[in-house]
Image (cartoon, rainbow, N blue to C red; front, side, top):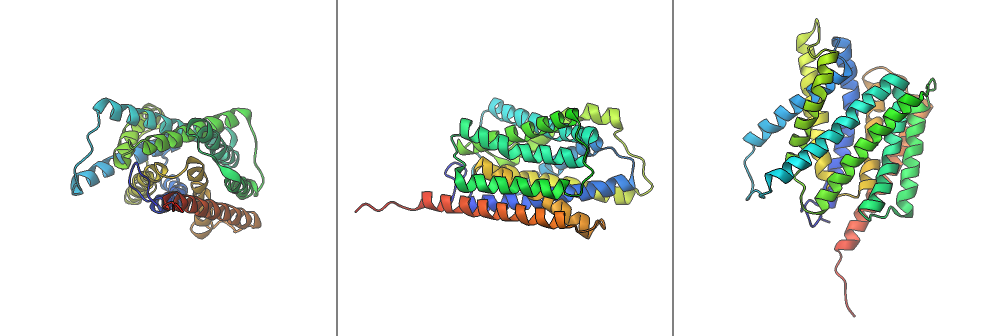
Length: 316
C-alpha cells in the first residue's frame, strides 16, 4: 500500500495524518496557557510558532544523517512551491484568527473546518479527478454533523457576516494548501521536509508585520514557563505536526485528509476537559463519537482502496 510517486505507504500516511490532527488539537490548550502567562496576542503567537518551528526543522535537517542520494530539483520550482504553500498557510491561519475575533470561536471553527472538507471534495473532483464515493460522502456528512454538535452544542454562538466570510477565506486557504500538496505528491514532486520548512519561512514573513503591529514581544511574570510553552507549540503542533501533515497529504486522497484533520477539535475538546477543567457535556461526547466514527470509517475505506489497487490481476 504505497504511493508510487513518493514511496510512502498509504497506511503510514494515514497514521501521520492522525498524529498530526491530534497534535494540532493540543495547540489550542497550549495557546490558552500562553495567554494566561503573558499578554501575547494570537498573531504574534502564530508568528513565533512558525518562526521557531522553522528553526527547529532546520536544526533537525542539519543533525540528521542524509539517507541515499537527494533528489535534485530546480531552485525556481522549489521556491515557487514553498512560496505558494506558505502564502496559503498564512491565509489559513490569519483569516481564522480574524474570524474568531469577528464572530467568536464556535462559529469561526464550524465554518472554517466545516467548509474545508466540502471545498476540498469539490476541488479534488474537478482538479485531481478523485471521486469521493458513497461511503466517503457519508463519512464527510457524519464528520460535519459531529463538528457542528461538538462546537456549537454549548450554545451562545453569535453569527456575524464579516466573521463568516473570513472563516470561508480561511477554509479556502486550507483547501488550496491540501489540494496542492496532494497534486505535487501524486506527481512525485513532494518533499515533506522542504515543503514544511519553505512554508514556515514564507508564512513567518507574511505574519511578521501583523505581529509587529500587535506586539511581538510579550510581557510576562513567568518567562521560564512562557518559553517552555512556546517551545512546545513550535515543536509538537507545528514542526512535527505540519511535517507529518505534508507527508501524509501527499499520498492520501484529499477528501480523506480533510476529514482526518477534523481530529483537531476532538483532541482540543478532550484536552479542555482533562487539563483546563471544562465540563464534559452530552454535546461534546456525541460530537466526538460522530467525528471519530467518520474518521475511522473513511481511513478504513482509504486503506481498502489502496490495497485493492495494489493487488495483482490474475488472467484466466
